[in-house]
Length: 109
Image (cartoon, rainbow, N blue to C red; front, side, top):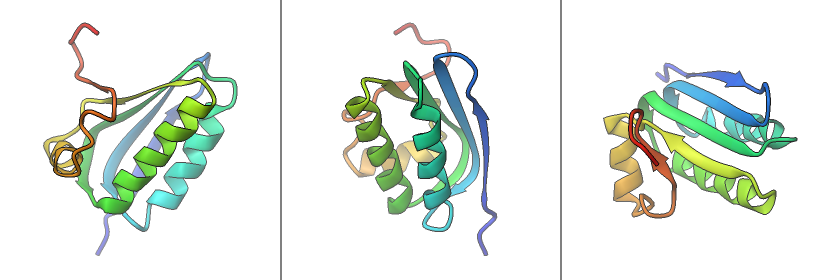
């Protein structure tokens, strides 16, 4: 049984943030891509905080790749923030850790 995904957004200003908590899977991915699309309108930067993601499958990776591509088409900086160990494992297993810009809190860019 899926525990679902909680999505919090901060669409104020040109730097947008989406914070995820729970399971990023086939059930929650369509909702996330719609929120990413909406968040890109008028944005200069979009960050996706994966720190509280407890589970992520290949559909979660696919939606992050799609979001990154949409961002780049609109000239919006896209980054993943603090991937949880579970999310980081899937990103690295998919060989996408070099595709995404991944930022750990407290790291200077």
